[in-house]
Every structure is written in C-alpha cells, then in structure tokens.
Image (cartoon, rainbow, N blue to C red; front, side):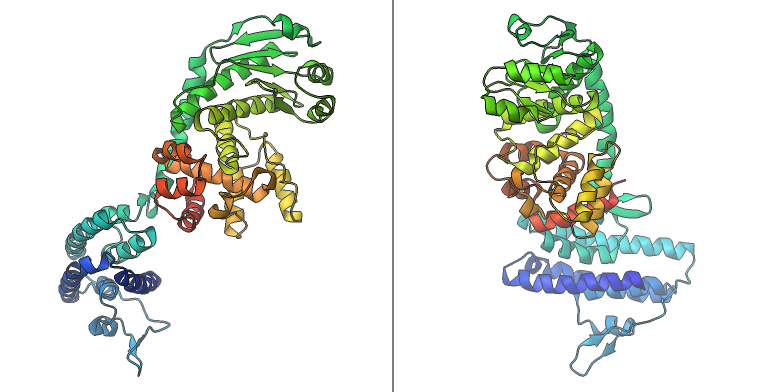
Length: 475
C-alpha cells in the first residue's frame, strides 16, 4: 500500500506539472491521444486482472489510470476513495493491501500484458521527448505515469535516468560510477607503469649556486626532480607527476601537456628550504618571509615548483596538485581564482586517484565556522578520512553548498562545505558523467554555472538533488 501511496503522490505532481506545461504548449498536448489510449488499455487490464483474481495488480492498474485521468471515478472507487461534497476524492488513511490469488501462469501473463501497455505508451512518449527535449522536472513528471504502468520495466526506467542494481533502481550515474572507479584504478596503474624508470641527471650550475646540497636529480620527458633527500622519493614524484599528465589528458580531453618540462624541487629539511627561498631570484625580502611559512610554492615567472612539506607523502601530494593545476591553466585558461570549485574539486579528486591523499588545498578560508565545522576540518586533514562519506553526511543535514552558490564562490571565501561539495561534484562528473567532462572543462573559464547546465541538461537545483541521491547510492 505504501508503494501505491508513493505513486499517487507522484501522479498529483504530474497533474500539476502538466497543467503548467500545457499553458506553455508543453509535450502534454501531443501526448493526449496516447494518454487516452493508455487509459483504455489499462481499463481492459483491470477487467482481466479481476477475472484471474490478481487483486493487487488490479489496484496498481487503478493507480496508473489516475496518473492519466485524475478524475476517473471507477479508479477512485476501485481504490476505496471517498468522494467529498465538493467533488474531490479523499484517500483513506489506512486500507488493507489487496492480494494476488492467481497462479504462476496468470502472473506471467499479467507481466506480459502490462509490459505491452507500457511499451505502447513509451513509444509515443519517446517521440515527444526527443522532439521537445523538456526540462528535467517536466520529463520526470511525464515518465512518472509510464513507470506507474510498469515500474520494473528497464527501458522505462532508462528514460528516468535509472538502472537496476540488484533488486533496486538507482541513478544510471551510480551504476556507471561503480564501473568508472574500477577503471580509474586500473588506468592509474597502467599509466604509472608506462612512465618507466626516471633517468638520473645532475643539477645545473645555477641550481648549485642556491646553497642547497642536492643529493639526487632524476627526470622523465615531462618532469625533472631535484631533491635534498632520498632519491627514491624523487623518482616517485617524477613518476606520479608524469602519470598525472596522461591521466589529466585522458579524463579532461586536454589537447596538450604542460608548456615544457617542469622542474620540481624537493627541500627535505628546514635548512634546505631557507637556503632555497633565500637565494631563488624574483622575490622581495618581504615575500621571502611569507613564502617560508608555506608548504611549497610555484616559482615566480616560471612553470616550476618547490615543496618543503613536513614529510614525503605531503611533498608528493603537493607536487602532483601543482602539475594538475599547471595542466588546467595551460589547457583551459583558468586557475584557482578563475573557477575555485573546479580547481579544488578536480585537483583534489585526481590527486587522490593518483597518490591516495588530498593534503594540498588552495583555499584559505576553511578554518572559519562553528565547532562542528572545525571538527570536520580536522577530520579532512587526516590522511584516512573518507571525504565522500563526509560529504554525504553534510548533504543529508542540509550543510552542503548549493551548486549555484558554489559556482560563484571565490577561492578566498571557500569554507569546509565548499571544499567538500566541490570534491563531491568533481567525483560525480568524473565517475557518473565522464562523457560530459571535456565539454565542461572547455567552458569553465567563462561561466561554470552555464557550463554545467548546458553539458548536463540540468538546472543547478536539479543537479543539487541528483548529487544528493548519487552520494546516497555511491557504493
């Protein structure tokens, strides 16, 4: 009975939506004949189910009829609705659910007949949807009536953007995400292996004048790494940054790599950091004081980068994020100031796929907020925290940032929830809508809200709802 009540609620929304759509010359007008035919077919189906004692199926058919003809008197009476003095119908608060008493052959025939009715109406609906391409809200309302005829029909569910997972229906993006996450793991391994062993090299004369005692220099065609520490760390940074170039191109559709070989400097002690920052050209004395307080930085006027984080995993994370950022700027023309959510979201997600961490953030505002938010910040900074689970919990409590707000948020105003939402949105796009990602990337520099709405055919509000459901189904 609960299932029938849920469908009735969907039908009432359908009636309201179609009434509004009709005033706008919506697809509902063209579906009129098909809707009437569906009612006629369902009336015949109701009569047959009664003769074979499939009373639960009969009630479901009555419910489906109300989706097409809300004032259908026989359907209301069949469902034991009570007619009010004003002509409206009252649904009883409680009613015993009907049962099927037919045998297996009758149930099989029932499924066959229901599928035939659904297929006939679906054909008309697909024609209209293809012609008008209505907004998602209208499309969902139109498909609701079809699903009431046969809620287990895969083709009908596909029109609603759903796919089967075991015994339940989930977003198609949720099932695709499962496949993509497995593909990403395999792809990353392949790309890392393909890099091969970095070639040993030597520091340049200018680098030897910086006052740093370099212990190793290695390179690939994409990156050159100098370190004051362990050569194994330098090799790993070179390999992962090189793999990042290939991964970024594969997923974003980037037409080229970085604008030249990128030099990465790993400064593993405070003394090495101080010597490097003090001697590297291009900074004022005041700037050098500030730079020393950071964990790493791009070098003035260069594509190159230096890291002096407290440990090797953080230096690796920062180096990979710099490489991904450089690729974003070179190929798509925006940085952390131009499109904060994409810079942080995609950068954090891809770094996590490559090296398993997300230590490096470009946003400067996450420390603000209430006690709960500050506690969350601490959890996110831990290497073993699950960002997707945290995002889902915040979304369920209404704390996630709305997409429309996220698209206008500047990096200096980014808070913890902005960071989590950006990460979750990037995951949704890369895992669930990968075919749209290259198109989105190309348009992010000008208007990220429009880029999302155009590529996904979803309004920001519709994307909010879809993202929340996707997070709940992501397993």
